[in-house]
Image (cartoon, rainbow, N blue to C red; front, side, top):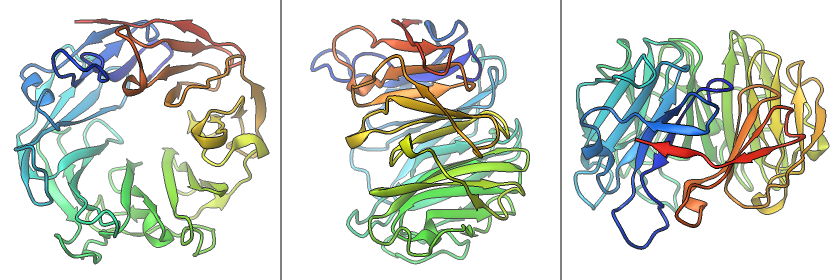
Length: 371
């Protein structure tokens, strides 16, 4: 959701758990009435790519009107590092009424992440696949656009398989790539899931051509035993927030006031759990969805109005006991919750929930898909 009423989603064309009927696939949709009605807004000619077996789809929204859709169609059912596939990026500036299609990217890999700090400058990470899951090798290419997504050029890549080294651009093969975030046309971060802190968070200051380890104020061996995963960062001007999960140890919450050049750790509330979901809406205001045991959701959420220096506990009016529940807050008060489509049962859409008071009460409703 980009506001209390407007939002974007990838929805299934039919229940992905069904054993009969047409094969389901993901397709973009948009709401303008607070998630109650979702209108399909697939770009013209995109369904052939979207419905391709093993297709990957990435949706990134800058605001209620501008969004990008990246679709990669597999060239065959056999997917190996180095196989060439076709990726298209579609861009809309009018809420999905019309889309402009990019030039085709006929390159190895599948679209995995999009990041646009503004309407012009963007980055696309293509996942080339893992040569050896046990070794943790994850090959990737990074592409950049300077015309809003119509044309893309490669700016960095990992060494090709079977290498496990670090490329000249600074991208390591080892460690899963878990997120891509650019705060300006120059400064960006690549988050990872890793047992090596040096690779868990990478930073670029030249628009993605060169990457290096982001210095963080935590022990160098933090990730070495059980691994860790970095979430974020989110930036508002020069203020940024990120979290680092390292179960079974408590997570780290880090704040920067100088565009990520230095970071400071701040305490999280004791009830946040080992893997909380933290979202900020400004340089001061944020919400924390707490984590219970074994992937469950906590019964108390938290809000902050001072960049995480202190947190206010909010007992939840609904207990979300089903695994796979998603949350999307658009402010410290207004938020939505839903059961992910792949975890839903039955032929109807799973319920969604809306709160206007930080979760003290949640109102259930059944969303309707149209088009």
